[in-house]
Structure formats: structure tokens, C-alpha cells
Length: 273
Image 1 (cartoon, one colour):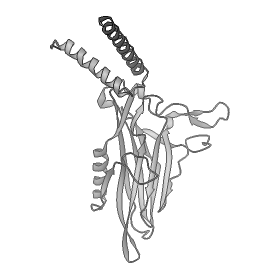
Image 2 (cartoon, helix red, strand yellow):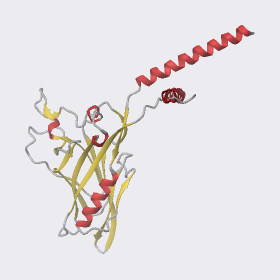
Image 3 (tube, rainbow, N blue to C red):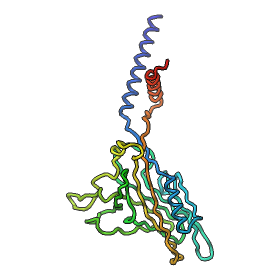
Image 4 (cartoon, helix red, strand yellow):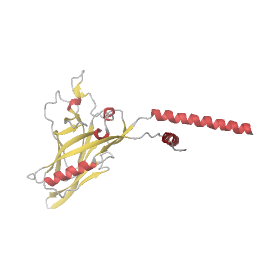
């Protein structure tokens, strides 16, 4: 009987050790995760102040957790705009989103930003001025925005055509900076040759500098009243990059590792276990 108990004890010790080593192995293979968060307060305050300066203090400005389809499930700017159509005043929304946002691995780097716009305002156009927009990284050095299109032109000197989003339309484009482009050795066409945001380099910076931003200039132009001045808004989509703590995918492993870290912390602090 005593021999059986001894064997069972040894068996459970060996199994526990193997599981522990498996947990460490799985933990080592997990990719480091980061989180990209939109500075909501900056975006809402800036747009509200710009509308106030142009005499549109009654236009509601909201930062939604998720906009209307086909926008991603991420934060977006929403403007509710009333418009005079014949004898009635009708409302619609303009939703603008820039991604990626949320949790993602450090690799691959961010090649470009996706700009999406949904316009449900009747008789109103949303116009995107790419050449008056700008990109910036942690050093706040402005970089020219380039909208990627199939078969890029031979040079980037020419002005970019504005993008127009008519009522009941959605729009999507990928943008990067001018200095990210190079020529394909085979076709001699321009194409992105460097990522827009190298996350590994960003994480080497102190937390206040782990940022990048897209300043997007849009115009809101009523079509029913062409003499009405266009509303011009510079939308500051500023993103902060943070590091998430390692979390094993298997709950049992998470519990084992949390106990290990807790015991190590107690030993280091000199507290009794």
C-alpha cells in the first residue's frame, strides 16, 4: 500500500512537471501582442472646436465604438448633419474610420492605414483632400499622404485627385507616406517598399512617444444649396501603441504561470509564502 502511494506521488510529480514545462514552451512560442488605441478625446474636441469656429455649434460629434457597415468593429468619428431638402429638414450621418485598431501582433509592421467613410446624408458630398492631409510619427515630422491606387503613376510630383463620397455611398482607401515608395525593378512602377509604421522600432521609444497620426482633411458640401460654404474639417486620428501583458492561450497554463509569478514576487520582496 505504501509503495502504491509512493508510486502515485512520483507519477503526479512527473506529470505536473511535464505540464509545467509545456506551459513554459507554449508561452515562449506565443507572439507578443500590442494594442493600438485611438485618442478619442483629441479627435472629438478638435472636430467640435472646428465646427464651432465655422458656425456649426449644433452639429453632434460622437466617437462610436463601431460605425455602420461596412466599417470595421473599431472606433470611428460620427457626425450627424441636418440638410434642407426642398421644404423638409432631413438628417444623415458621416462616419469616418482609420484602421488598424485594437489588438494585433508586433509582426508584420503596418504597411499602410485604411481610411473608410460612410455617407448617409442626403444631397451632400464628402470630399477628401489627400494633398492637404498629412502623416506623422513620434517626432511630429509631417509626411505627405499618398493614396495607393493600382498601377501607380511614374512620379509623385503631380497633385492627387480628390476622392468624393456621394450620398448613400461608402468609400475605402489605403494610404501611406511619400517616403515609403520606391520603384519596382521589373515594371518601374511606384510601389511601397518600406512599412509606414515599424512597430518594433516604435516600442523602443518611451511610452509618451509611441504614437503616430493621420491628419485627414475632408470637406462637407451640400448639393441642394451650392452657394452654402463647404464645411472643412481636419480630422486628427492619433494612435497610441501599448504593450499587452503575455497571456497564454490555455487557462490551465495561465493559472500555473500566474502562480509562478506570484511566488517569485513574494520571494523577491521577502514576504513569507
